Length: 464
Image (cartoon, rainbow, N blue to C red):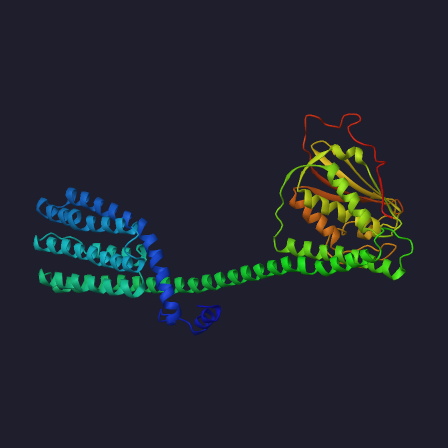
């Protein structure tokens, strides 16, 4: 079965309550499973009703007739319904076999009502025929049997009732009158059963088509995940090889006599690596591949790793990165990898787009939160972009007009949200910009480092 089979069936229709063979067998199996679940409740309700009827018979009918009716209900009908309840919870028989047993139970239960009416006629007691109407309505609507099965079983019950009335010698006009009302009730039940069956079939096609669409979406998502995983390795590998090859030509870092083309090539490799990382981060976010591992994270190692990364990655830009190691004692609840990526994006953004020559990284405690700041001394963000910088594909124009996708700050926002934090920006024209990330603080018994517990580093990491 595929989506094309379902669409063809929807186009062809099913007024005869039959699907094409490839769908019909699946539908009948599905319907039988639903009937089995329905029978568990309906059969219990039927059992309670017949027990109540037995008590009413004992109270209202003549003693001789009550013995017969109560015996039929308690010895035949109630055990039959109890058997159906028991089988509904058993692993065997199969759903299709249970559906047949369920239909047979409806037929036999109706025949017991016919037998009770016949016994009343033999004893000259005017027992109403309306019990047959209740049986028909119960089979059509409460039991929810398929249209063809319940219609055939109901026809057998009506014929049995008619033969019983004739056999007991009921007056001919009365039989015709009763038969008319029974046939009317049966016609109403048949219309209801056909409508219900048709609606269930329509819902079945819609549900199966939706399931196939969901499966196709899951398969596509899996293929995208595999592509992203492969691209993360295969696209980075050539860049790493080129970078290593260039380093082998000039093993001394910062060698002054490097050819300008070599320097430019290294800068482009660094930019391509950052651009590729941004694209892959965005793809992983869209596919829901990133699940944060929240833990208590000290800012000191994050700041240290970020400083080392900037020294290696920024090339020859004349921008200085100043990191406040004194605030590194603060701890936040975060994913260390995601936090490093967030701060890396903010620092890169400040260095490439601010137009300044100094970027500062520091943190401050704010109640139960820690806010990490990345500020610059540049020209500040334009007022028109202040409320949109964290949206996808929105880019400012720095002094170098570095190419990019405008996804860096969007990734900052998404990663921060995953870590249950928030982010924002404060800026003024000509006064620089300050981007911040706020995360839950981890309160420790020792809120700060002891004097002399760290080695002074000057708090500065030039970015060359």
